[in-house]
Length: 237
Figure 1 (cartoon, rainbow, N blue to C red):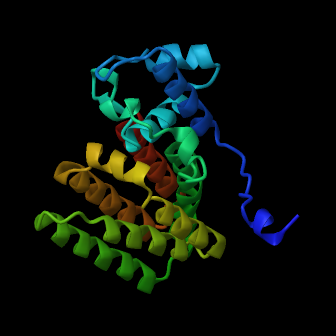
Figure 2 (tube, rainbow, N blue to C red):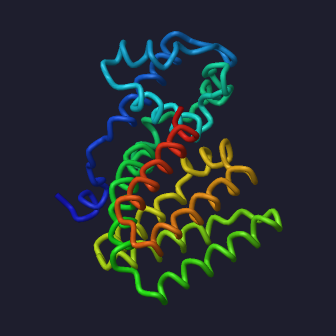
């Protein structure tokens, strides 16, 4: 076999569950010849039919919406988009890796950042505490100017992970924030992020700082876990 023939081969990668679910939903749309505007079965019905969890169906819908194949209307259901009838298919872009799904990333962030908060309460130096407080002041100024504080948000969480003294946590937080630049996260952010949500995030981080300064490790972990509960409901319910 020639080298040219070998170079034509593509790397085979395992398909993530949400990608497989998304392909099944796309097959349903095409095989049933559902026109644009058709309402799809509910998340619960699809989960039961496919034998998967509702979060897996939710991730699949996020992927399909990101690709423009469906439209999710808050409180109204999910509808076929006009683009779903075009020649663009998930099977044709399967080599365009969308990455780990938002739920998977969120679970990882929650595990790492809850642990980081507890360790930071025990180990943060006065300089690190001061640095995080400066970051929150910058975030407050951005919010006051109607600027999305996403980069300051990231900076704060990276500083928190560094203050934990665990460099594996630090690397993990940084890599997970890199993944938040994916198109699926862009879609989620457009739906739930606004000045009120930025304010709520700032209030949480200021309360967290009080716990860090009090060296309350249990309180810091509890506060971070409650934060992920609140944010998870915004993004995924």
